[in-house]
Image (cartoon, rainbow, N blue to C red):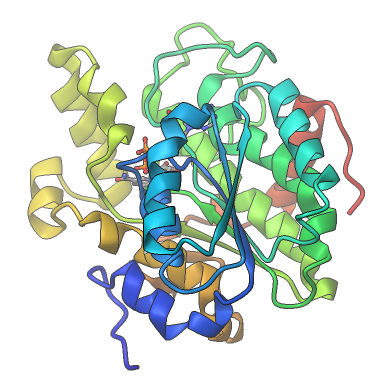
Length: 332
Ligand SMILES: NC(=O)c1ccc[n+]([C@@H]2O[C@H](COP(=O)([O-])OP(=O)(O)OC[C@H]3O[C@@H](n4cnc5c(N)ncnc54)[C@H](OP(=O)(O)O)[C@@H]3O)[C@@H](O)[C@H]2O)c1
């Protein structure tokens, strides 16, 4: 089946095209709440014949409609749910251990770190970390590193997919003050940009460590899709919101928000999961250069992917900082 890769490429045709990469395999995804990109991703994957879909979310109650829809699409898919709040290392460790101990999960072929938050008000988590840094990066750093034995058990061809954002272009990692302790330093999109840059730097460091296993990590910007993600932006002080969003748009996209919306209207959820699904399934991606996908293709132009997100030295620095912040070393 011939497919054109662009911003309109939908997830479902890709699932059918790469059916042999779905059949019998085990997928894990964080953030399966209905109405989001993650739910659309796993519901699309169920259309072929994955053996197992593992979902990680904050509550079974929230994930249940997604589980029910997967059952309607394909009753033969085994769905397993594990509860974890990425902003609580205790619960992430508990979920990871439960997955490692589960004899019905001998391996994880594809891990998709999809969960995320954007532009939340300043908050320090129970682990003493700025909320967006933990939700978007550190929770996933801990979860993924803990699960690596089962990912490596899947062998060459296993895949890790990290959903990041064009928002990484707002700023690099604030190595000197990642938790925004300096007075007046917090900015909703500064924290989002830092966390999404960290996601890509982590992928760079992990790719280096997993190369000898034939396992690749890809990161991606899914596009602009209207989901619950924008709730915190809508809740910003109305007097500030237009100015903040124009500033973000200029820094990230190089044009005003109005120009941006005109050039790139919201994607549908199906087009919104297209990039994740290609990253998860297309075996030929490994032949191409790059680690970051935009509109279903790998891109390396600094216009799309900032150097502060791909620099190997910064990736190692971020790995060390992440180990310090989660309080655990990973010799991979
Ligand atoms: N939509 C866009 O335009 C856009 C653009 C660029 C990047 N992205 C990225 O795409 C990904 C999916 O976003 P979306 O648009 O689908 O947003 P969404 O509908 O709000 O979904 C986000 C998911 O993450 C989960 N989550 C949030 N905080 C969590 C935590 N502390 N622990 C565990 N799970 C948590 C949410 O669970 P709850 O329901 O429990 O909150 C939800 O399932 C995110 O990484 C986002 O940054 C989206």
